[in-house]
Each structure stands twice: as structure tokens, then as C-alpha cells.
Length: 198
Ligand SMILES: Nc1nc2c(ncn2[C@@H]2O[C@H](COP(=O)(O)OP(=O)(O)O)[C@@H](O)[C@H]2O)c(=O)[nH]1
Ligand SMILES: [Mg+2]
Image 1 (cartoon, rainbow, N blue to C red):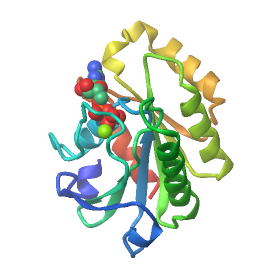
Image 2 (image 1 turned 135 degrees about the horizontal axis):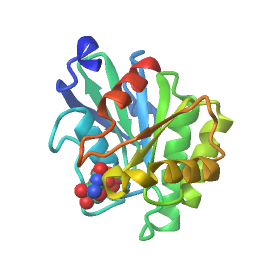
Image 3 (image 1 turned 90 degrees about the vertical axis):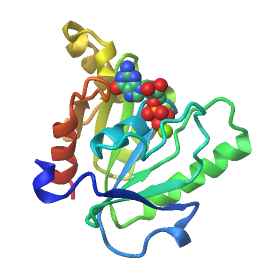
Image 4 (image 1 turned 180 degrees about the vertical axis):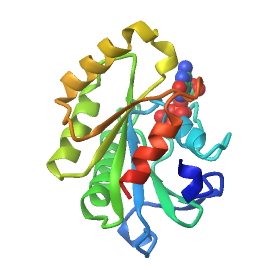
């Protein structure tokens, strides 16, 4: 249980960074969280940290354009990566976003794993697949979290899991977690998996 190792509720936004020069300067382990806008990333963070509104669940996807570093009990950090695949973002914005993410993911020694969030209801998007391939290419451990499981009937869970794994060309050494912040499914499994990586 995560609670034996850290007080998961003792969490706060430490800083927001646009580039390397603003990242925290220590060697605490970091878990980054990535996913399409609206996939449920903020809800995932809030649910794991037992907080209602720490990571804002935004009605305006694509608005958070910085890397948000959350300190958790002074021991580990979550790094909230701005959501991708938001149509109303300009090409210039998209390129800036890409550079910012790439810089973090390819050069950050603190990074232990990326939680890659996908919507359990649907096949992964082209962006989801590209992100997964990128992480595999750089040999970054991935935890795929399939969100909004409450919207998928239990009898179809296996079918949805297989379809997502197939589209991603999922590597069996990665973890796949079925999650719902609404029905509070997969919270302990997420924490256990995250703590295994750090
Ligand atoms: N049914 C359901 N809705 C969810 C779940 N998680 C998030 N949502 C909803 O999906 C929308 C986007 O969530 P948010 O956490 O802001 O997504 P983000 O853009 O990835 O940070 C909001 O309306 C949430 O209430 C979930 O587990 N189940
Ligand atoms: Mg969000």
C-alpha cells in the first residue's frame, strides 16, 4: 500500500516549467502523466492524491501549456504533461508543445516511468499510438492507464483491453491498468505500480 510509504494527501503544485532551466534541481523520482486532452488525466491525479481539485479538471482542454510538477510528501513527484490532440491549438503551439515534452522525456534523469492515459471506451488515437511508440523508442517504462472504465460494461473489459493492446503493439513488460475516478477503480493498483517504478 502506497500509504505506508508516503502520505499521498500531502501533495502540492511545486512549480510549472516551460523548459529545462525551470525544472526542480534535485534527484527525486518523477512519474510523468501524458494523454489526450479530456482523457481524465487531471481526474487521475486528483483521485490518486485524494484531492478534489489539485490538478484542475478543466472544461477548457489544452489550456494548461506548461509542465506541472507536483510534490508528493517530499518523496516523489508527478509531472503533469499538457494534453495532446486538442484541435483548436495552432501549429506553432503544437510545435512548442512537442519540443517541451520531448526535452523533458528524453533528458530528465529523474524520470522513472510515464503513465500514458488512454480512454478505455475507444481504440487509441493516432496521437496515443505515437506517444506509446515514442516512449518505447526511448526505452522509458510505460504504465498504460485506461480511463473511464465505469463507461464500459464489465463483460466487455477483456475485449476493450485486447483491442487497445493490439493497436498500441503493447509490450508485455509494461503495465496495463483499468481505471475509473468516478467508481474509484484501479487506485491501489496504480499506486503499487508507480511505487514499483521508483
Ligand atoms: N465517467 C467518467 N468520467 C470521467 C472520468 N475521469 C474523468 N472524467 C470526465 O472526463 C472529463 C475530462 O476529465 P479531466 O480529468 O479534466 O481530463 P484531462 O483533460 O485529461 O485532464 C471531465 O468531464 C471528467 O469529469 C472517469 O473515470 N469516468
Ligand atoms: Mg487536465
